[in-house]
Length: 304
Figure 1: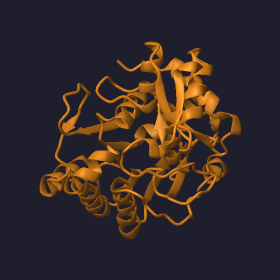
Figure 2 (figure 1 turned 90 degrees about the vertical axis):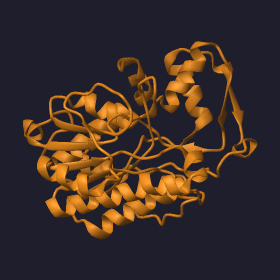
Figure 3 (figure 1 turned 45 degrees about the vertical axis):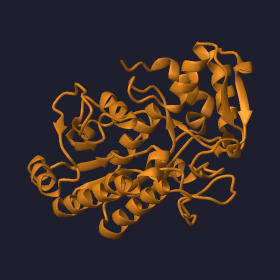
C-alpha cells in the first residue's frame, strides 16, 4: 500500500497537461510539481512558466493537433471562468469557457485514451445539509454552478478513466489572482474592517494540500467523483476569525453579515462537503484535514 507521506518515484513518469496554468489552482499545482512532467497551457495572461504552451481551448482543430502530438498521460482541466457574477451576466461566455472547453478536451482524451482530471466546485447544492456526499443529488443555484455540473456530466457520459474533484480551496495566489484567504489577510494586515457571511457554510482546504491529494489520487490511478475538503463545516465569518486566531490578527476587524444583505448573484448557503470517501481511499489521518492545520500552512507558502 502507498503510504500517505511517501510519494513513489513512478509518478515522475506521468506527463500531465495542465489547463488554466496561470490561474490560482494552476500556478500552485505547477510550482509544487516542477519535478514532474507538467505541460502548462495558458491563454491570455503573460506569465513566465517553463515550457508553457499558449493555446485557445476553443480552437478544437488546433487543440486536437497539439495535444495529440504531446501525448499526455493525463489532462488536468482547471481552466474556467470562476467569477460567479460574470458567469451570470455573460452566459454565452461562461458556456464557452466552462462547457465548450470541457467538451473539446473530453473528445481529445477519448481519442488518446488518457485520463481526465477535472476541478469542479462545491456550489452544486441548494438544500440545507451539514455535509454533502458524492452521491447526493445536485441542484445548481446559479449559472456558474450549472456550467460545472454540465461539465461533470459531459465527462461521466463520455469517459471511463476520469477523476472529478469537488472542492473549495484557499491559499497563496499570484498578485493578479488572489484567493479568498489572500483578500482576508490583505485587509487584516492594513487593519481594515471586513464583512463576512455568517450564514454561508463551507469546508475549504488549503491549495497546497489539495495538490498533494491530487498527486496521490493520480498515482494510485483512482477514478470517479471525490470531495476534497477539510473536516470542518464552518461559516465564512468563522473562517475569518480562525485566520485571525492562527495568524495573530485582530478578531474585532471581522464583522458578520447575512448573504441577503448583499445584492449579488444567488449562492447556496450550505456547501460543506463530506470527505469520508477520500479519507477511506487514501488512508489520510484525520488531523491532516483539520482546518486549523490548513490555515497554519499559509505561513509556509510564498508565491511571488
